[in-house]
Every structure is written in structure tokens, then in C-alpha cells.
Image (tube, rainbow, N blue to C red; front, side, top):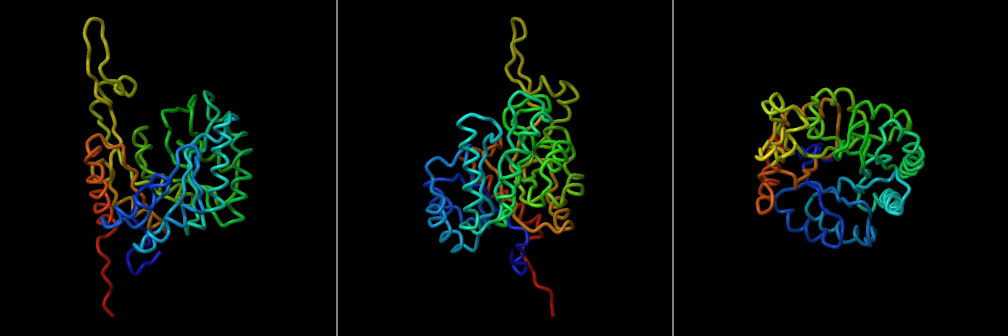
Length: 314
């Protein structure tokens, strides 16, 4: 990262991995994005990562940007064919990360479906000990997104890495320095956790940051709790009631988080890396307003970073 350009922390966005990645990046680069996290859902499909790197890297470097990470978001802990392909995607992403000039591979930690988090730990160790060792041999870091994907401690389908207690268990199970978090405040907030103390407790494990926020309607929490208020258009006898959600995922700049405080904490903890906006979730700035919201978030986060770099007088 080039500190003289005020880019020890770059601000970027997520890009779907595949045949259109380079074209998509080329279209949005003029808006000022500084980094791109290339992500795949569950498997790499028919994507050849060497070819993808050859297509993407001239566009990215020509725009003075970087690829921050590769992501494979599936459940690698199960034993079915799809989980096997997810694990193969992790292996290939680790092997090809440096083709993209990056050293981070991210995704869900997975879980044994329908079982409590602690019952997934042996399987987590079995899968991620060798993956993390493989990554370490290539100077690559593993980062788990802290998204619950609708799961709880007791049950879920996708990811155990959404709770600080689980993080402790995971990092004890695989005690290697190149395994950590792809952190964001949103998922903590919608679980009614304060995300800020995590920046003190887990800074050394935060390798990558997703730019995603949340709005929590505490009045609805107090009135309806957190279980009923996630459902809308509920039939109540012979009449219906519309109960609004108690929390929304938001694009940064529209939610409750103080990103100036977040970036301050990151810098105080010597974080150097990227904050990549995870769009496609905001209830308002979506569809035809998607890129409007993302560019607003880009400029907002740059301002939270300190605005335009100004050199000190000599």
C-alpha cells in the first residue's frame, strides 16, 4: 500500500468471479474504486483462475487499483459433492492468489448442518488445518466472513464463524498465525452485539474488512423482540399484520455505524489492507440505485479515512 497516496487502507468493492469480471471492473473503475474482492458462490464453476488473472490484472493495475482477495463462499465442512467442490475451490484460490497480486483467500468456515457450533470443531480442524498450512506455504492468509447466514449457535447451514466464542474455539483448533477474519460490523449489529470492542479484542486476526453496515430499530426490538419482528405480512386469525424487520443490512453511509471511528480503530491497530463494499443488500439503494449507493459509500468511506491526502510541509 502506498501511504503517500493515503492508501494504507484502500476502499473498494466486491466483484462476482467469472467471465465478466474484467469487463465489470473496467466499467466501475472510473468511479474511484481502489480495490476489488473477487468472489465465487460455493464453487469456481468453470472459471480458470490463471485465465481470469490474465484478464483482470491489466485492467486493475492500469487503474492503479489492486485485487484485495479471492473468496469462495460455500460450506466446506459437509461431505457431499458440492462441499468437495467448495474445498477444491479453496485449494485453487490459495494456489492462485498471487496471480492476482493478493495474499488473502476468504469465505465461510462452513458447519455441520443442523448441529451446534461446537460439534463442528473437529471437522473444522480436519478441513482447515491442511488448508491453512497450504496457504502458509504460499504466504497466503485465510479470512472467514462473520456472517451467520441465518444460523444460531444451536443450528445452521453455512458458517460457524459468526460469534466471538466460536472464533476463540476456531483459532484454538487451528493455532496458526495466517488464519483470521473477514470482519464487518453489520453481522454483529443484527445480532445486537456492539462491534466496536471487537476491533480491540480481535485486531490481530482481522485480515480483510467488508464495507457493510446495518440499521437497528431499537423501538421495534423493545416492542416486538427479535423473533417476531423479522417476519412481515403475518396472518393473525382472520386479519393480517405487517410487522417491520428490526434490522436492515445497509450500504455504508446509510446505516448506524461510525466508520470514522472504525477506521481510526483499524489504524490504531496497525491494520493495512482493504475495506471492500458488499453491496446488493440495502433495502433502498438497490436495483437501479445499486451503483448510486455503492459510489456514495465509496466517497463516504474515503472521507471517513481522512479525505484527500495532504502532504506535510517540509
